[in-house]
Image 1: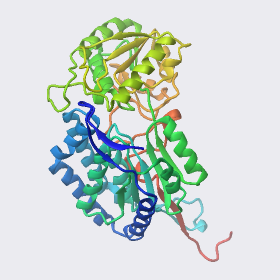
Image 2: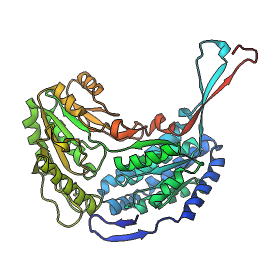
Image 3: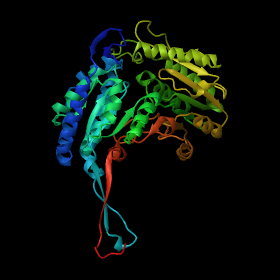
Image 4: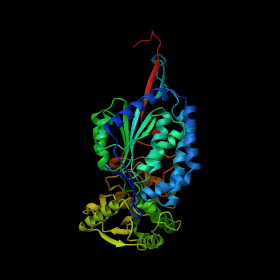
Length: 463
């Protein structure tokens, strides 16, 4: 596996990094566990100081951090700054809330003779984090902020095309005052995943990535009897009911599909529009996409970034061609994109009938799947006709109706009158082929802790 920074806008290979050696992996495991043995006993207040310091550094040096995101994966500079701030907010959230989220809980018991029962939440060891390239800082922050705050330590295997983003977060935590070994970036080779997960000092793995990678890692973790959380792909439904504010819905749809160049697991990938407003919606949607300007991601006027790599663009093109073989009709929308760089022309895909396998695929880039439905019932059916279950949206002026529709959509998240959001104080996760487990808030911080029952019972109490 080649760890390398390749600028998606210019195609230039900026820097390469060698894979970690077997000995480096073993040293990192030893250092992480030695750090854990002391870090687990550090007070929440002291851990919070480190989290706060990390947030302050990100805010102070936002330009430095944002430019690196743009260099490595082509993210718009303004979006890169927003991601840096979001990462800081996650650190701040756990600095403020970790102690309360993990406080001991007194359990109600039916009979006093059962004892005085409490539930305590204790760290377990090293968490192995495997993260993707599309949000290089946010993905790290949303696992290390809760897990370090809980008293665990973390080893990171990041995507091969964002090695400097991984390294700068390693340096960030050292500058923030985290003890040596408590968090470390590793340029791990493929075979190291099994080595790390089979180590008894590792308590589990948190992976965000593709279905394929998730299936492989989950299998290794299962064989090793290790806890795993999986945040995988998504094909979010964006439902527009006949009573929606159509113009605003269409504008949100254009944003929801094309932010981060459409490379988001919770992008609004499948637009499902009621027949009564379909034509109006489509007209506004196309007009909004036409406003997008592809170009240098460092230029403030650019609103459509290149994809993360030329390979990503080539793979997406091949996927679209395969969908056409199954009967999909594809229309070019928006202004032409530059030939130089890993750009991808926005496309609109229709005729995704029930026998077209492409209706069940995730297109990771600016390819919009569009469905025309007769009513609410059909919208819900189409929304659930997917192997994924991550996020989704329902647009309607009747918010109570929207909530009832949302309850019938089989996903981990549904937003009414807004594309799926990512925030520091909201949970993130899905069901079905989108994975299992949750990240952020109290759900995330409790994924890799031991929920231990301690029951004080009278020695003379009956069994």
